[in-house]
Image: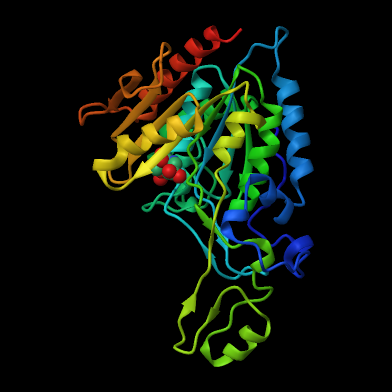
Length: 358
Ligand code: PAZ
């Protein structure tokens, strides 16, 4: 196993107490991708994450260096509302898509870097860790001396798979959107070649509170409102006791990823919508705007049953007729997870794309 002992869901003490910048005049328009990294501090463990990844890549590289690697991002990012974080904004993602996809990539011979929300679902373990019916100790018999026969078959099956593939799996955690972005940027530069695939299934927040506007301490409720104001906080309760949040848009990192950080790699992004009438339009827009290889669209309500692949025809002249739209669906009689259909199709795109690179 290559996994680093990195803990992302605790406060990073290096940054927790004080701010390094007091510039409150920055507007959303002014914030571009590079400025983001100048004004939001890098996680203290980032070098450890980079070193571990380098070791993983070199340990599993074969002689001709042609083994494929996929970076799977998975789960939701948090947006802290305070520097010493008590409250944060979160999203729904459990990490099912990412964890299940990572398994399928492993089955197909890829090395997998699994950049995931700490404590979300992970490959092979996911069947046991987040059950609503079974708690951890239920997996053992009375007295705890052996595995409960009820679960034995499934545990043995998944344990065998885990042991077979774990050396090709690197698990790297994140919790906040800032940790995610710094990690993505750092990993991208290590994975900038055509045998690398980016499979961006994480649900990344579109909004955040910039570091220089984060309240240092826990936001106080109405009673202590003067305290909030005296600290010149970005977000504070008003006289009606309402909490007013002022969030900036997260810069669009996909452009940077495609254009510079990993311009030699293949990029697959996901587009999530809740209104089916705009899903394909938005996926096509994303494909054209960021100029990458594949967008996988999915609806919140049906994401485990169907997805749509949106890609450009290789002989494209950049008009709408040159866009391929292909649905992948599982039906009720199909016992497989949808990722067992998605990943071979993604790999086919990767193979074709590699062949087109010089
Ligand atoms: O983690 P999960 O299986 O519950 O959900 C997966 C998903 C819907 C987050 C993923 O398939 C996806 O669409 N990710 C990108 C979301 C976005 O548009 O930011």
